[in-house]
Length: 322
Image (cartoon, rainbow, N blue to C red; front, side, top):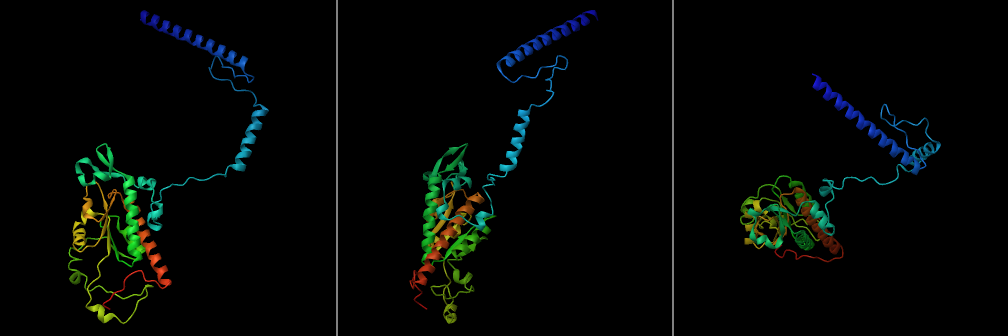
């Protein structure tokens, strides 16, 4: 036990000696700081090794604290409150217009995210910006340009009195599809497309009610007997938000020369649609942005048509067989 006691005592003595040296260094630093500054540094207690508290706070420090509290009461409520920038409900209640399409909006909606490089379609090479971590990145310049072009097409079709069909059959796309159809005064489909609805439309949609309206969208009576044997209406433009699941629809539109607009991801074939929009079709926010922009474009076209009708100008060719 004696060697152990000697070892412990030597260790204690070494720790005590190092502590005394540290205290001497602290006192020397304290004296050096006091010699350089006007404000005195609080001394360190040799027993507790803590900074000694001053007996009383100086009048200057108290005055500064009172001034700080007074300024806080005067200007504490001044300034702006930074609210969350993204509010999901605004894409449905107040969709963006074609003029609001920016690269920042498309980037925030993840329109640039493509699929894995193993799933890509080589026909989309012109729309791809690069590869990151095995995933294709869609060029947002291409997305913005093609979206603006599609918006102009929707505006012109609506201005000429055309029927626009918005199709989105994936989960979560129903509300934005209905909203876009309401803005553009068109039709919507958010369930399964019935094959042959265009090719055999008379057998599938023959019982749907049709009516005759004038250039001011007012119903004109007296044509019920002529509409009974008349063929069903066909859309003048189809906007498809998920072409991968609606190939039959796009094929029927191609067979009947109906132009189509579709959101084309990196795994889809852009030749399926007439006017492709390269973007991420898996992002619901991206789909809501694109659908809202096209709906606003249709609304703008309808306003142009009604404004021309008020001046006595008909922007579309009326039916000749009625």
